[in-house]
Image 1 (cartoon, rainbow, N blue to C red):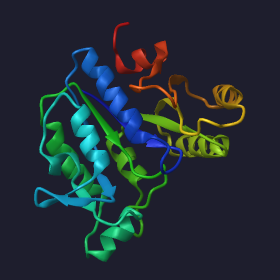
Image 2: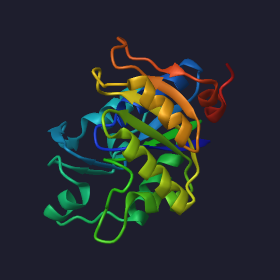
Image 3: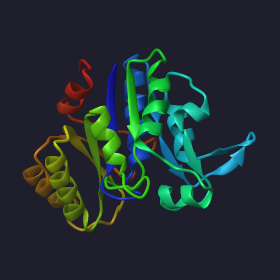
Image 4: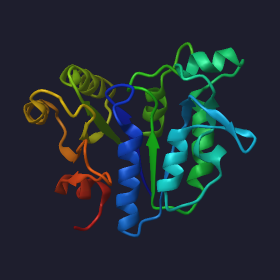
Length: 227
């Protein structure tokens, strides 16, 4: 089973959008794949439980069925930082708790698990730990989604520097065009290609309908998919 952690340069970088496109790509190649959203803050009651739109989108794009609480074990109503939302309801998020939830999901018969993070890379989960501590514990390879907007160079390069400090295996990055009016869009992509120490895997254009990825050979290699 192949496992990846999908992180972003910031909140609203497009992690869910890209994760769903990757799941659909795997479906096209007849792969059994599902998404995991360990933390979600911003949810509403449906069918007598709290549900988050991003987690539901991952479920809809997957080719393996699982109960909601397996896909999204830590869910909170207010759209705020998860560790703050957890404190408001006297809950605690821990690295071990996420690992226990992940172990249950890993028991399902699937070829791929794509885990979508929350917010950006350095997301606190309690007073002392970060979501990246769990990524390190599980030794997951990382795919970085760069939200293409003003400031993305700084966000992407700082994230890459932290990957290097932690010894993270980032297998590549995906450019997600979230600002259709971004000045020098291609020049920014070229700057990141020059400076990031891992390959560009794909580009997600803003205006595609239905949305799709412009796929590079490097993405197929990372996912072990034959062209």
